[in-house]
Structure formats: C-alpha cells, structure tokens
Image (cartoon, chains in turn purple, blue):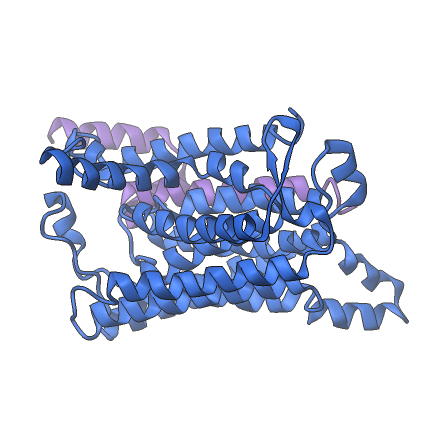
Length: 53
Length: 361
C-alpha cells in the first residue's frame, strides 16, 4: 500500500460515515461543496426561526 | 400568483395573510427555486448530454481544461426556468419592478441562448457576432433605462448615492441616468460572463451578491428602515427581494451540479442573464456603486481582460500570463479549486463591506 493510500485510509477512518460514503461516490471537491451547500441551507433555516414563530 | 391566491384566501382564513410578508416570500422563493432546480437538474443534464450539447474548450487556454471538452453546457436555462417560475409564483405581479427585472433577465438569457446554440448545435465557434451581441444587449439596457426614467415618481428613483457618504447625493439628468443604467446592466452582464471560466467561479459570487441585494431591496422598499439607515426610499423595491431570493436558491442548486468537477456549465444563457439581473436590481434600488464593490471579483476579471487587450495592442506585451485573471493564477500554479474558493472568499469579504455601507454612512 503506497503512502497516498495509507493517508486516505487514515483520513477516512477519522471521519464520519456520511462523509466517507459521499466521498467514495463523488470526487472530493464535489463532496466538500455539496456539504457546504447543505450547511448554508441549514443556517438559513436556523435564521428563519427568528421570523417564523 | 400564490400571493394573489393567499390574499383571496385571507379574506376568510386570517392565517393566509402571513404570505403578505416579503421576508417570508423571499425565503420561500429561495426554497422553491432550489427545489425546482434539484428536481429538474439531473434530467436536464442527461438530456443535454444526450443531445450532445457539450462545451467546446478554447485551445489556447490552460491545458488542464482540455478534459472539460464535451461537458454539457447551457445549464443556465435551468437557472432561468427556476427563477422565472419562482418569481411568477411568489412575486407580486402587480409590481412593475418585478416585471422589469424578470423581462431583462430573460431578454439577456435569450441573447446568451442564441450565442450558445450557434456555438454548440451549429458548431459555429464564433456564435453570435460580438457586434450583434452588444447591439441586442444595448437595446434591452437602454429600454430599461428609458422605462425607469419615465416611471420615476420620486427624486430618489434617479439619484446617484455614494457608499459611506450620507450627504453626497447626485441628482442625475435623463442622459446621465440612462447612460449609467446602460453601463451597469451591460457591464455586469459581460463581467459575469467573463468570470464564468472555472467550475463554480461565477455562480457562488452571484448567489452572494444577490443575497446582499435582497437585503438592500428590502430595506429600500421599507419606509421605516430606509429612513433609519439613511438610504433612498424606493416604494415597491422590496418586492425585488423575492426575485433575489429566487436567484440565490436557483444558483445554489446549480452549484450542486457545477461544483468541480462540473457536470454542467451555465453557458452564456446563464452568465449574461444573471449579470443583467444583478445590474438591473442594483439600478432600481440605487446601489450601483455598492454593486461595484460587492461584485469586485467580476469587475477585476473584466478589467484584467481590458488591460491585457489594451497592453497587447499598444505595446505588444502581455500584463497577465493569461486573461481573464483566473487563468493567470492557474498558470501561476494555483489549482482550479484553489482559485475558485479564494475568489469566493474575496467575494464574501466584499459583500460584507457592501453590507457595511448600510450602517457606515
């Protein structure tokens, strides 16, 4: 196993299951950006609670 | 349409009056546009790929981009469809500003669509000629300028305000107002188009700037907030927040598919239209100079092309390794994703600076 594969294995072990399964399917930058988009939407939802009550 | 329905239902059920709030409809517009794009996106990308509507890559560009050849393009049609449907659903269709921005956006979208269609389907590398493209853009922008000048009911509608300087307000003559409107709309449209050269580079700054413009529109359309913050009160401008919400939602959903490595490109149909939309909203809410600050990345990209062309024609030397600016940094050794995310960070800072002008004046 080369160094790159060893590092990848270590990184994936350190991260949660959701990321790992997404990263296996998508190219990595894709996964990052899509998780950022989901976070943005959740932040918006959180901010909407200021008004929607 | 849904607003009219809600207002009708509110006569019997009071709950439906909640839809009169612009803030709620802005959030709902963003969510609706996002949902439409997510639903239609995958099918549209498959269709574009099936019809072989693939991007051609400039041979003199960075070599790393050659692998992008054939990626489906004209994805901007997805953004425009989402924005149009959402605005018609959640916007107040009695408001003339809503129609001005929507028709301008679609008009520029048609110009971009013809250009893309000729390039991709007719295999004509030049697409629409530069003269024809600029001519049609000019006609639409001048029509918008004339219309806004003729329908201006308050001095505030046609004054130029300076960011950070509360008491510097310049009343514009018809000629200056229409010229400024023309420059802002056509300039922003082409600047966004030039920026659209890397995966996700144009769409995320567009989302951020439209989000900030939604706040400006809401504040400008509110008599109390605009007076408190010392910015011009533009009756009816608040409704543009719904339109800006739709841009942000559709843009975020498009980024899902456009993130590196992109599954689809927006093409001129998206870039020209989105730029024109931002420019038109900025003109109506009288924040042209703030748009110049917040859209700094678009401005710098456009200026880099102008400098490169001028320098090469005058001295025979190039200032940048390649124009627009994002290619310069790529050739300097930055990875595509590094250029994109760093330009996003710069836009975030510029948008914050633009928003700070609301209070710091």
